[in-house]
Length: 390
Ligand code: RFL
Ligand code: PHB
Image (cartoon, rainbow, N blue to C red; front, side):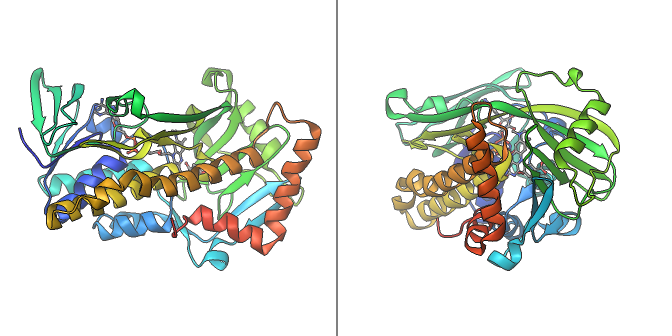
């Protein structure tokens, strides 16, 4: 088998890259470890930055996102029993869309299938060969047969637990990591929205987030022990915790409903540099992870793919390699900005067990600042909707 660009992983990064390349007349094959049903039903991100919305729309996969996603012009910060709004649109001129990641994936898979794209699900034993040469390859198993895919470039879009990152020699790689001693307990609930906008809450008992999926389904999270088990959390205990952390002195209350899914997500910050070696390039979670507090992970994956698409187009259409050579450096500017923002949001909003009472008051002082100073609110809003200049 031969193609121009061999892509490992059918997450948002891999599928979008394949589709954008197709639109520019460049051939690719996507290899995915899981089944189509599985990737189309795994619950993950929800917030799309303006730049992500624009990229999906330009790629021709924005119809359902526009029709079914909810456009949000701000969000609320809850702390000290009160709620304060960050008006994203007034501060930045931009907005965000709440539209579930697995819906984005359904749209991308449908677009690839409609374009006769080569997409293999349920592959196993993926391995990468010859990235120091001009014709690397990917070996994999599919339907009990061994295959080798020869290509010009291998793109690792296989997420944090994928195989691609370790194909870059360890001596050339530097990993930066911070694992947080807490996780998020996530629930899906059949209920009407608690609020028109997302609520990020800081409370002595820990962080909580009220998000949404539709008029009938809500997504909520609260900070928990990452090693806790969902079985330890009865519905009653979950609601008691959410009320304690999110309800305001002004009378706002979390709206309860039927909980139909529970999961626990660990939290880490991670960056692996370099993101390229020879004919191998990494994009998305394969190279970096942010804690979800800033809602940046999916958006960063899309931003990497934008940079990489431009670089591959320059190579195939103009025989230029300068953009490919600069890929890692270009992508890392936005990545480090998002890492800082996500880390800052996480530290400001979560209960930190090593924090002294003094440091806890600093968290509140910072929240007072971002909700009363227009300059501080603008800095937060710019990062949340996605910084353009990096
Ligand atoms: P993915 O989505 O992990 O996709 C990688 C794919 O590669 C496959 N794979 C392999 N395939 C073949 N061979 C192998 N050896 C393979 N190894 C792995 C996997 O099966 C998988 O299908 O990475 P990608 O494309 O880089 O996308 C990244 C995003 O998924 C991720 O950053 C976001 O979900 C993070 N995130 C959020 N991001 C946002 O921008 N906004 C949010 O609101 C937001 N909320 C979240 C989140 C992540 C969360 N979790 C579950 C960590 C909320 C949560 C709870
Ligand atoms: C979500 O809706 O899943 C979501 C929203 C905002 C975040 C993280 C996750 O910061």
